[in-house]
Amino acid sequence: MTATERPVAILFADVSGSTTLYERLGDREALRAVESVLDILRRNVAAYRGRVVKTIGDEVMAAFPDADGALQAASDMQNGVASLPAFGDVRLAIRVGFHYGPALEDKADFFGDAVNTAARMAGLAKAGQIITTAATVAALAPLLRASTREVAALAVKGKQDAVQVCEVLWQPDAEVTMLAPKHVAAATEPVLKLSHGARTLVMDSATGAVQIGRDASNTFAVSDRMASRLHGRIERRGDKFYYVDLSTNGTYLTVQGDAETVLRRDQAMLRGRGTLAFGHSASQPDADVVSFVCEDRPKQG
Image (cartoon, rainbow, N blue to C red):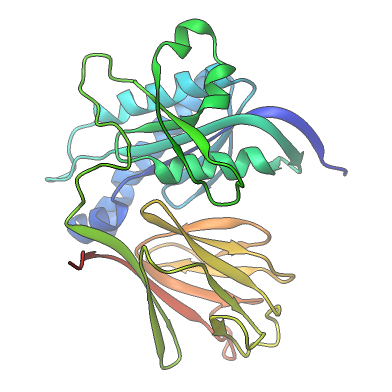
């Protein structure tokens, strides 16, 4: 079936600080907490004529026929999660990003610029924040447009020009911290520790994308014959890390506590600890795997 292009609002929402959640609550209780959030996200997608495209770990990707529905769903998601009781001493929060624009639809999935831009907006959002683009705000009904404010023109990976970023004010009576270049630096930063054989690499804010594949020019050159020359890459978006599959045979992702999943020309957020296998399951005796651990480390300087 040939892919068709149409305007759509793509929304990404994920649980903020899920690594800490698993460390403090343990796998079973953390999974229960995450599922309670995912239930809220799914209900609000359906309430505004949206459709959940996919759920990967603690992240939901959804599509809406218009920008209005995406904004209203995002606001209700934030309100719903904010009203949840704490799990132990952990209070849950989500980050949401969305963008309205043309996207290719094929086999119930979406691809293209709208998807990439929405993912970048979610990567810019902080806990309890909804981030979108000025182009999306222009497509909103006037009443909804009044609940947004411009933040800054920011460089977005994959875009030649800076993108005007806007915030949705879903808490009308609250003081919301503005996302801007001049902010108070956090004491810690998220890093991704990658291990392949005897080699270890730590990805932080200064590290570029990590490429994995059979070719020796990759950051990690794997020997598995099922792997493509450039099999996939890992990139940092905001304070999270994503694996993007570029291969012929797919990437087998295992996150501790979850069943192994297969990514084929798809992407997934990396959380907790786990493994990436290339072309076939990590359970195969000849699998050449890259292990990962997501953690927070004190900032230097």
